[in-house]
Length: 114
Image 1 (cartoon, rainbow, N blue to C red):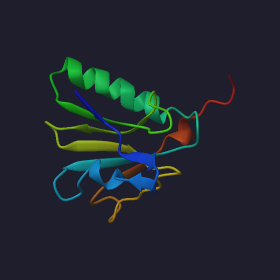
Image 2: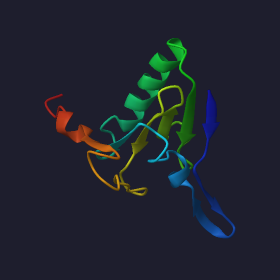
Image 3: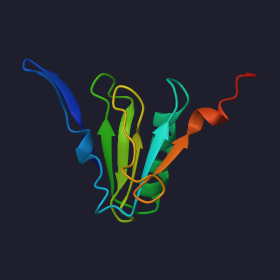
Image 4: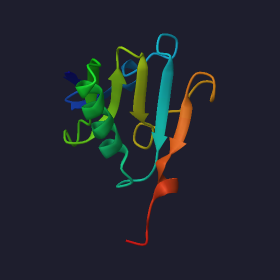
């Protein structure tokens, strides 16, 4: 597994390379996860990473520059699939929803009865 920081604060300002997490033309599937803070976006990506590694799938993780324990994205190289946190501050959407990528709002599964 390889790990990267797709963004950083530098003396020259904020630099973002979120566009390097995936390639809509090369990857077969890009999943854009939406949901507020604490809805489980990063936890979901970590769990999928664990399962992929156990299955022998090569993985790249993209760590949040402000919280390295959180993920901004993950890419499963063998299956050419990427999952990205598509909420602020790195709002992203597929160029052609349903064709070049899918949007999942995991806040729909939020259980506020706990």
